[in-house]
Each structure stands twice: as C-alpha cells, then as structure tokens.
Amino acid sequence: MRNRWRRLTLRGRLATMTAAVVTVAVVLCCALAWFAARQQMSTQVDDTLMQSWSEQKALGSIPNPCNGPHPFDHSQALTTVITSAGPLCANSDSNVRPTDADLAVAASGTDGPHADSTIHDGRTYGGTPIRVYTVSLGNVTINGQPTSLAISFAQPLKPVYSALATLAVILTVLALVVIAGALIAAWYVARTGLKPVDRLTAAVEHIARTEEVGTTIDVGESDDEIARLSTSFNSMSTALASSRERQSQLIADAGHELRTPLTSLRTNVDLLVRSEDTGRPLPEETRKKLLRNMKAQMGELSTLIGDLLELSRPTRPTGARPLEVVALHDIAARALDRARLRGPGLEFTVSVEPWYVRADAHALERAVINLLDNAVKFSPAGGTIDLGLHFGTLTVRDHGPGIPEEDLAHVFERFWRSPAARQMPGSGLGLAIVSQTVQDCGGEVALSNAHPGTLATMKLPGAPTPPPELPSTI
Image (cartoon, rainbow, N blue to C red; front, side):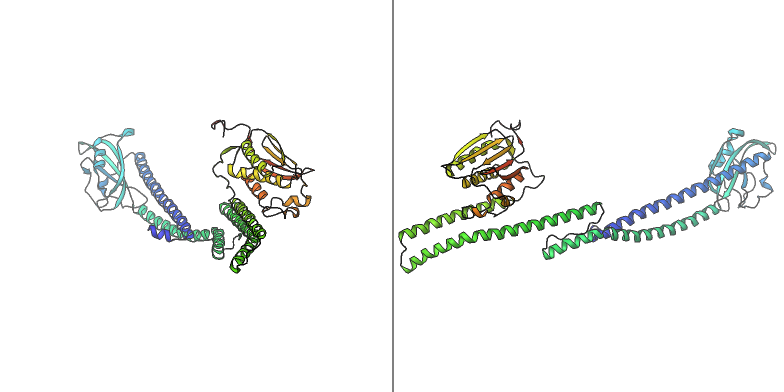
C-alpha cells in the first residue's frame, strides 16, 4: 500500500486525500442525519403513547380487553390490561407480550401521579415489533379479589422502520453522488492548483536537459506559496545565470591575461633550447637577460594565479557562521611593514586607532596590502603615503598622478587597468579582491582623487574594543 502511494503523482495524492476527506465527512453527516431521524421518530412514538394514556385517564374508565382486542391500526394505540401474572384476558396475536419490566410495573400497585411506568421496544404475541408504554393502574377488585393492574399502550414500529429504511436509501444515494462529485472536483482542483508546479517542473527539466540557466517562469500577481516558490526559483535561476556569466568572463579574462606571460616565457625557453640544440651558445649578457625575464615572468604568473585563486573564492552566503573577530589595526601594521619593504624610498605617515571587526583575517590583510601596494606603485620617488584608521574607516593616500575621472567607475572591475598602468607590473585584480573582501565583511570601499594623488577609503563595521568573551589581545 505504501509503495502504491509513493508511486502516485503529487496531483494524484492531492486528489486522493481531498476525496478521502470529503468521503469521510459525507459518511459521517449521513450517519448522523440517520441517527437523528431515528431518535426523532422514536420520540414522536413515545409522545403518542403517553398522549394515549392521557386520553385514557380523561375517560376515567379502564378498557375491557376481554371483549376482544380492537384492530391494530396506525391511528390508535393498542391497549392491553395486564396483571403481575400476565395479560388479564386470553392471549391473542394482537395483545402485547409483556416483559419482566411490564410485569414489575403491574405488580407495583401504584397509581396517581406517582404511578410506576416503563417504555421500551417489544412484540405482540403475533411477533409484530411494537413500542410499548406500560403504566400502573393501582389495585382494583376483580371478581371480589383485589388485583394490581397495569395498562400497556403499543404502537407498531413497522412504519418507523420503513421510513428509516427509505431515509437510509436516500442518504446512501446522496452520499454516493456527493462522493463522486467530490472525486471529480478534487481531480479538477488538483490539476488546476498544480499548474504552476507543472510550469516550474518543466522549467527545471529544461535547465537539466539543456543546461541553459536563467530560464524563468511567469509568476503573475499571485502571492501564495506556489508563487513564492516560483519567485525563489526565478531568483535562483537568474543568480545561477549571473554566476555562470561571471565565471565565463573570469575564465576568458584569465586566459587572456595568462596568454601574454606564457607566450613570452615560451619564447625565451625556445631561444635557450635552440641555443643548446644547435651548439651556438648565446652571449652571456643575452643569456642572463633571458633568465631574468623568465624569472620575472614566473613571478607574474605566480602573482596572477594567486590573485585568481583569491578572487575565485565564493561570496560569503547570507546566514553563514559569523566570522572571527580580528584587530584591524594589527592587520594594518603588518601590511605597512610589507609596504615599507616594497617602497624603501617612500615616507609613510601613520595615524591608527584600535578597531575590531569580524572578517577573514587572511583575506582582510590581503585587501589592505593591495591598497598599500597600489599607493607604492603610483607614488613618485621620495613621495609620501598616508595611512589612517579612525572609527572603522581605513584610508590610504598617495601623492601620485591620480586616476582620470572617466576611469574611476572601472577601478574595481576584474582585470581592468588604466592606460597609464598597463606598462607596470600587476594583473588588474588587486582592487577587485579588495572590493570582494570588503563586501564579505559588510563594509564599503571607494577610490577617489585627492589632488594630488589618490585616496582609498575602506569602511568596516566593528568596535574600538573587542567583545567581552575574547582576550584583550588578538
């Protein structure tokens, strides 16, 4: 059974469950209606029997059943006078067959307002099903002997049974019609309600078959759960398409940037190999120059590959584990030490205050180093570089030529290099790495002209003191 249920489609499961719920509800309603009707009919019969006793009391006399029982009809209750030993006169098919409860009422000898009585289902001596109401008449004298009597009023139950049977047939037919309609309606509702899921499934299958990410489906103006699912799918598909496009662009740009140093390196290696193969050694100065060029090209390749690896890190997802708390002022100090080694003739002015942020320590240090490297690269000989950190804002300023205004919008793009910097070492990935790292930390970074020079501004959220649970030094 479980395997069959699992093999059903979502539409089939929804239709089956809906039809099952409606079926149970209809069956319960019909059963309750039938029992309520039976109770109502039984109450009406009981009221009729009690009314017969009230009318008999109003007459002030006891009927004589021994004159022959009157015909059993539906308009009048059948009466039978009984004693504690049984019916007062000879038994006949029309007389009530007394039960122990009836005989006990007859033996009680009570009368008036406190007379004993009982009401129950029974049968005549002829086997006809009846509803019996027996009430005590007290003690009377019959043939000179005091005798306790009771009178039984009876109504046939056949009309009630017939009416209940007819009602049962009607309710059964009605239930079957409603259940059949519910099955059809459930299938229609499941089919109509799951159309957006069909479109979503078709879109997913299309992407799986063609690998064409970016496919979206029409959501319309609805805001239900399926609409939200469709909206989320569209966002995911668009994000995947954008990610693939960025990946393709990164691969294309990386291939373009790698082609130049690899070509140059291959040319130099070919020259050295040809010299060895032909037995015509190159001049010593030329050979040393080729080796120096090869070393520089290998350095460029190493730097470029490192930058590509850094830049290929996935963007930190929302809801990921919190980053560790690091001291930005300590990171700035370590980056400054490396910048001094790369720019030995430059002067550095430093104004740094403590600031603690949540970040990847290695990535953040790489970002600060990249900003200082740019400042070192574009500073004139003997120039000054200003490094400041105040209230979470890190600034790096050089006094070089600056950046043309039309190029400022492109400085954080991958592999972008200004015309003035294309003859200088570098891959064009440094500022792109800075931008990605700062975004992962929830901060902002900007580059502007300072006249003279360039001002890089990095703003990171944090605090001037570490969290209480951490030690005072990091």
